Length: 213
Image (cartoon, rainbow, N blue to C red; front, side):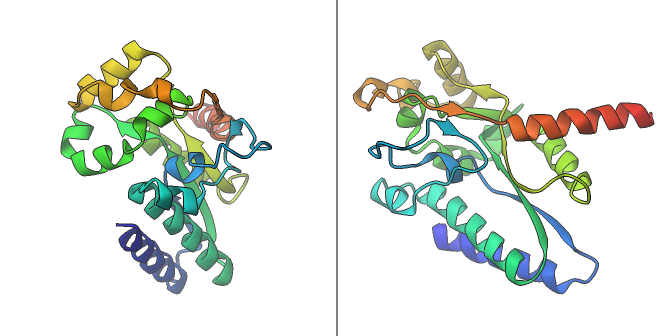
């Protein structure tokens, strides 16, 4: 799965770079490309934001193939963008939700939730409504010739309590223990997710939209 993600990213980025009318590109990555870090490191920042990158070796050790694919695909996209002078921004969304979304895309949803118990225990299990994600893509793309740059973490809900985990499990159609069943067995390090960079950009964009209407 990981190599398929990488090849697809590489092909798309090279196609964009070869097309003279395309100078800006927004790539959908994943929050999984940010959160899987080695928590045994004593100096590991508790804040997880757009500067955070998952650890490839850790993803391989835990057999998080979906996360590994997203991580490597984003890295190759940045490499090609730099080499071919293509302006790139990436959006790293949490688990995508919305009316019937998980039922229409069950493979990606289940793949994202590999390691869900650990994500939940560490405060790193976040979701984003598909409409919010679409709005984020529009806002980032429209701002690329002005202020948008780099990576953006995108989520609108952090699953922090058992009842929230149970509700999410019900929405997806999986047993609740797939999310919160064995969360106590993990090292009790609680991280802080931040989407401040995207929220700031979107608030400016919304004000501009209202100003033009």
